[in-house]
Length: 254
Image (tube, rainbow, N blue to C red; front, side, top):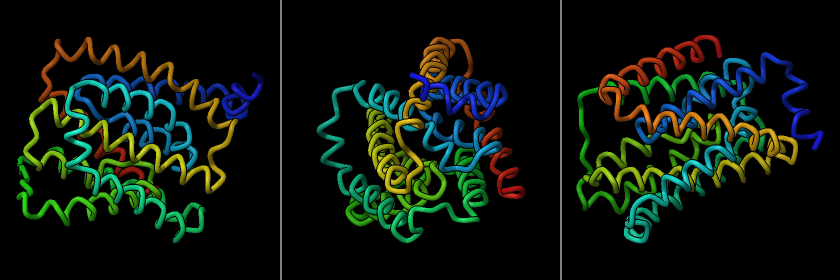
């Protein structure tokens, strides 16, 4: 059991508090709007550690909360049939990017994370609503998946361009939430394989990630309670403004 605490002890009290606060806030955001756990946690943790280290802490909280989200609703098989080419693209894109990078962290990873967060914030704050025609989904799904996988491999964030693409498919609210859970689960599995291959995710980091699940779940339950007591529009706007500010900081300082 010593390994459970070694990762945090080595970083001191400040790191422990940062991890707990980051995953608590990330879980809160996910509980309110159905997404944001990897984005918020990676963005906050990357202020103090390299993106691959932050991504290693993310694996178990992301997997548990996304499977929970995926299990809600009865459209799993329908969505799996509709999105399987995108999901395959995620895995392939992550693997190819890992091979290209040689399992290491590029010097520009922090800048790339900042740019991805800025793009995500800009899309979220924009009033533009995209639509993907059915005839284009056959080729767009794999391209979006592969691009998302490549970005995930470098930054640990798997929302661009997957989330805007899913939002443009015309799914109803429940289907969209379940589709995002499916996409995020596939991305988390691919990211875990990436990190294991690169040596950034072992038993020590897995135990540390398991401990991070506690504040993430507490935050998510608090967010579900808060969802009915705040304006979703205002909350989303604040979320994207905060993500944009963090992205700008990482882009300039990364």
